[in-house]
Every structure is written in C-alpha cells, then in structure tokens.
Image 1 (spheres, helix red, strand yellow):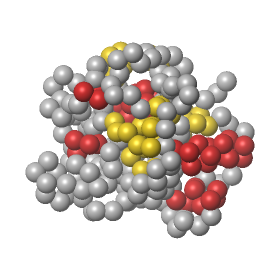
Image 2 (image 1 turned 135 degrees about the vertical axis):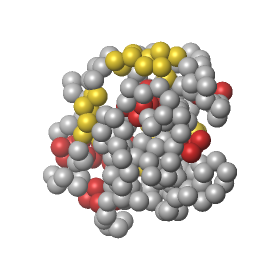
Image 3 (image 1 turned 180 degrees about the vertical axis):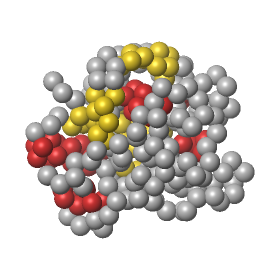
Length: 231
C-alpha cells in the first residue's frame, strides 16, 4: 500500500476539552451550544490531511490523481472507501466523531481557531474576509499548503469541509460526553460536516462551526479524513 493511499497519521492522546463555541465568539450559533466538557477516553490516530484525489483514485479510478483533497463525495461514499481501505490495510478505519474531530482540530487551544480568535489568508484556504473582500485563491489547494495545528494536523481550517460520523442535531443538549458519535436509531439521513472550506468566510471555518448535509449529498467543497482505532 503506497504512502499516497494511507496518509501520515497523528496520534491523539486521551484528554478532556470544552466542545462548542466559546463565550466570547461573536459568530457563535445556537447550533454550537451549549459548550460542554467532553472526555476522550482512549488514544486514537487521525489522518494529518484530508483524503487526497490520489488516494481516492486507488479506490475509485482516476479523478485527477494529485495532492488536492478529494471533493464531491457523500458520507456514504466516504464510509464505503473506508471499508475498502480497512480491508486493504488490516486496520480499523472510520470517520471521526464530531467530538474527536473538534478535539483534534483544537489541539489543546481554546480560541475560535487553533490560531487564536483571528484567521489570516496565510493560515488557511478560505475565500473572503469578514468584510467580503476576496483574499483566498478561489480553488482547493494541495494538502499541507498551509501551516499545521499544534498537533500536526493540516487543513482543519478551510480547504474542504469534512464529514464526521454523527447524525445531525440542532445543538448539543442531550448529547454524549464520552467522545462517541451521536447517532439515532434508525439512522438519520442528515449528517454533519466540520471545518469550513475554500469558498467560505472565516466565521464558517471556526473549530466550533458545524453544518448539516444529507448523507448522500455530493458537494464540491466537502471531503473527509479518517481515524484509526486499535482494539
């Protein structure tokens, strides 16, 4: 299995963090509240970048095999890919839970972004600043084109929005506090994406930002990364 198919992984240690929008975040939404403590009870490994077009091409054929993130994949597509890659590698690979994603994206920080409460075009790929002035390239860039967060993850701010494993809920009231994915029985047809994207504003790239998306939707600014969990 080539390095292009199985990306570099970062080990994330167990810990506790405050999930959701901060009290001084002027762009906070009720969808990101209440802010609450979550425990991540076990270490896990997470891909340091979103899945690239080169990695996806090994599974689905040529989509332009380069180092830009694969986009236009549904959550169902992502899960099928991870089933295939798990069988190929012998690893247990899956989408991160919302809690795992935000814990890893924050990387021990407490601001709106892992860079603090502000974001600049040198730190992430987004299109407009908060005054609607164009500041970004206007297209996806190769992974690792911008600096990583303190735990070595690239492109958690902007670039592509990323599927997580949870079903959509309008806020965190009644959700789990153990880091697991919040899912319904039967499963909802609406899922969650995190992290913002290359064609959005900084406010939509905050660590707490979350959005709803039909699980079979294929949108040109949505991709994914994955986690590896050892028994």
